[in-house]
Length: 140
Image 1 (cartoon, rainbow, N blue to C red):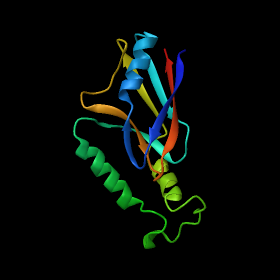
Image 2: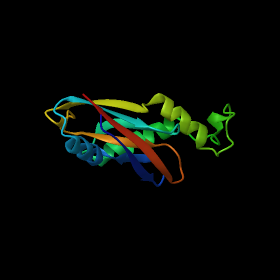
Image 3: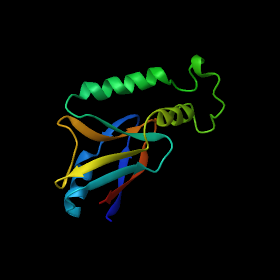
């Protein structure tokens, strides 16, 4: 079955849409029906299917997760032990644990069965830039 690895360059926290790359991969495979499995190979970022029409949705999600899990140097996070890679590292692991690192999307009639306003995103949780690898695997 077809498989590829996407690389997404991030420049800090936020949602990075990769719907177009997934659509192109599925189109090239020319499989009528199946399942696209999307898997991110990192522990401090995650995957989301989310609205891709209004950018306020992405901003609000960023704000929510920042309030839910602030950096380790925030007084409310004094309980964190893992700080060797900076104040954003353990909070990034927590955010990844609360979201998904793998998503399955049905393929119907050769197309991703996403809804009208749905997009596929890498959700970066770290402050500094990263090169994130995402495995796309298509099965019948």
